[in-house]
Amino acid sequence: MNVFEGIKPHYVGFNLFDVFNKADESLVAGDLTTFIPTPTGLELLDSAIGGGVRKNDLILLGGAQGVGKTITALQVARNIASIPDHYVYFVSFEHSEIHLMNRLFCLESITPPDIDLSNGIDLRYLNGLIEKGSNNFRNQPGVLNQIYSQDSKLVKVMSRINTYGRRLIITKANQSATSLDVIRRNTEWWMRQTNGQLTLFIDYLQKIPLKDTGNHPVPEEERVTLIVETLKDIAMSFNIPVWSIVAASREGLRSKRMHLYHMRGSSALDYECDIAIIMHNKYAIAVKDKLAHLSRYEAEGVRNWVVFTIEKNRAGRGFQNIEFELHGKYFALDPRGRVSPPEYLIGGRGEDWGE
Image 1: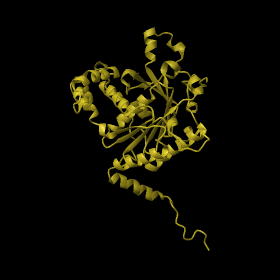
Image 2: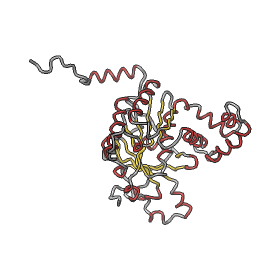
Image 3: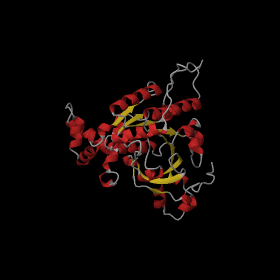
Image 4: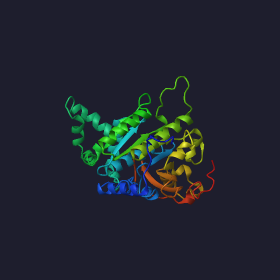
């Protein structure tokens, strides 16, 4: 008797012709996302990673605190949500929904990708308007809209945000309730609402809580392994890109130049991700001899640039260095960017980076 008789396999896969026909059905339905990657809106980054990110990709964004990881993630999220029929689900363990909204107002005020700082709005400007206007419109419905509609700069900002605001979903997560299971269920719910055209962002990975295992806390390496494996599974199961910020370890913060292995947790970060980007303040990793000919003003200007090192890239070449000017006051990167001259960076030519 055949021991496998009567056993129905759960999943047996497709032969190549079935895959071809399945791909053809997507094209007939007008769905090109399986073939064409989703651009990040940062042109040089898109060029370096093969045109953008693909469905099923897990993208990790690492670096020291204050280097601009959340700024980058939120700007990319905004860029993706600006594409017709594309939606973003942004889960933040770091900031409230209102704070992230205010960051977007600041970003939009300098009109990327053109970048016009003359009309820039910062948080102090927003807070001043609200403090002054709340007294004039107290106890009236729609007070915030009335305050903003009387400011010419904010009228333009509102007009820009109206083009994508309903497609950018932001949620404030917390470590007591927003577990991996909750993130998976919520992502699945938004998948149904958006017809599958969704990108998930997590800020940040190491803050995702695990279920209580009793009196014995799970070691961070095991915890990070489970989290990153689950995020990759969400990307694969739901056929969506997943972005996650990752925090640096103490060793990484002490190093001359960070690598992916300096991120807190586990080697699973390297195994599971498809794209890994480590961000550095350019001044911190610049070869100081190369800055010697610069004036003090010019040298200080180097601090406004952030180097993106693409350490892993399944769709192309790794260890590429590109850089973007950071306008921290407005929570924005200049999306135009430029290639980092390797001779100006510690380890820029691939030699030992001197940890």
